[in-house]
Image: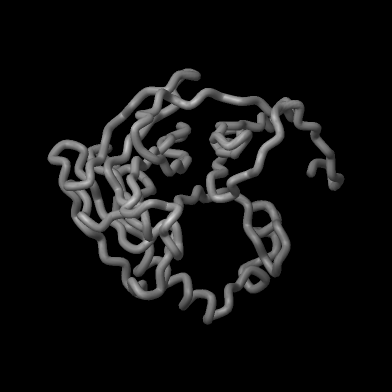
Length: 232
């Protein structure tokens, strides 16, 4: 949607089923994992040219199942490959398929100058024996650790040097309330006032009273600041 109007963009690539949770934005490109002809495909949409294209995945280990997730880390596209095995034959298992998965290890890849570069591997014995899958959230400021989300239940700092993990308690969250999904955000110069988007300049003109935030919202923000923001 540009200039207050919608534009329809034709997709000339293969037909697919979108995996909504895999979509991620990096610079001016949207990336997402799709299923096409019973296989996974990495697809991207360039917002500058309004064109779709397909991108090859890095080489996989083919002896086990995989669960993929995309992340924007350090401004680069990262792919996390969770390698898993089934506890019992999937044809005989009844219930949530995720409960039948057993984590083996995860490989982390980064797209660097249109090429995949393998950064590191996280193994099962370094996380937890009952782990099913993990996602990456962000790096620490010194780039020596990475914050990981395990089974959408708990978080921990994984030390890239010692290969050890330190669990991070999150105030106000309980395991029984799972699953969770952590992400990063980037602050902008655009403000939202009374459900309207205004520029920073317009916001200043409106005066402090116009932009005054209700006390109940301030309380919520205080809770989020103390309970959810992790020190990097």
